[in-house]
Image (cartoon, rainbow over all chains, first blue to last red; front, side, top):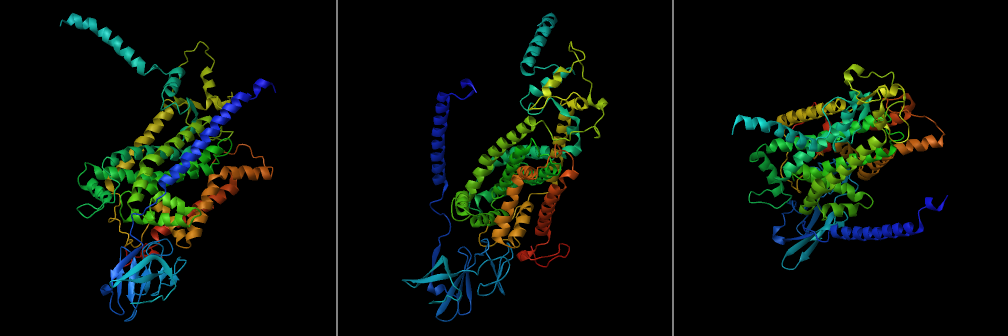
Length: 154
Length: 450
């Protein structure tokens, strides 16, 4: 092969360094765009919400919070619990039915205590942390996940 | 002004008009091969197609027109989509009527905008049809083995177009901000969450940790700007490569094919001094092989006007059928998005119902692993074939262009199995699933369902 058939040294260096610089610029831009697009704040419903103790349901009753997707249950005079209504399969909101909970999206079924009894759900519904706040308030953390039968003193 | 002056002016005006015309259209109006060629390659929009095509190309059976119709539907979607943009606001802000603005705009199309419903119907039905025709096109290309050498890479480009088509549909149906929109995207992005690296994809798609106003803006930008641009570029590459790879795939021997008779191909006047020469046939030289001087040459016809007329007829038919459907059936619009109450059952559009059915067995396997694997295999199908042929030293030559050719029995059997299974899953998901995703028979009405 003669010299002229190959890419000349100078051409190679020019092309190589130009492409290299362009690559660096592309990588930097890509990283910046990624940071630009990744969310840093949420506009959604806050994870924690509080209710006055006087709002608690009577013993044996339950109270539904649609926006927060939580059901509150009064177990006894002194005990209550909060269950998440977010299906553990793919995040649809489950419906409260007589036998427990049912998900309309892919047919997951839970019993009264949120244990899976049918459908594709991989785990039971989350029982949530309830924390008393000063001034007769309760704070419910929808981001928490406790084991079954996690009751809290009122 | 006197008549004489007018008479004087007439030839001047005629000459001027002729000159203006020739600045725009540079070919004559005769039926010589030169003019027929010039019409094709002198026009930006036509020159993506060859001057001459094989007669097989003109047969409906060869392509089922699936790819062409998919492209036409894309054009119609761009047209109706731009019109819809004039009346749409991607906002979840709740207005004085208690409805999110995006949803209110759907009602506005329905009640106030002149032919607003029709425009939306056409956009929605064209979107459904585009996915269907795209699937039919993939089917045709596979079972005829048309992705074999030298068209392997164009199959990959085509698959990217197909994926973009589905993603465009997916981003599009969030925009009305109704129940279907909300729960479709909610479930879709939950599936993304369980995929590896899914949290990042989900974060970038939603711009938040749940589906809300930020997600609507992002899906809107993807739907109206980024994805259509990408799809346009990939369609251009796809079409360009069809040319460069020598047109549609065809078997070596086409003498047995039923082709349109020569008498119907139109007379071509030869004004060349070389009366016996077919010099224009050198135009057919594309990559590699020299033009064949045998019966093949006689099976080539000028694209103008035979192919062009056929393409025009298909476009008119697509428009007509779509218009009738859009007049007769309204695009669905459910209640405004309500994160607290999914509809029961909550179903995705038909092309995702197979996936929804799979997901109802197992989220990770049905929603990520199986569809990912199938899409991956389909994407590189031609290369799998090359690999297997190399591995076993198979030399199969040109076996493209024939439906269900017996040389490709194995490939076609595998493909048909997956294809039919996919259709079955879609049918089960569409018709045999009722409230709470329970198995129902469509012919037995369920009390209190939907």
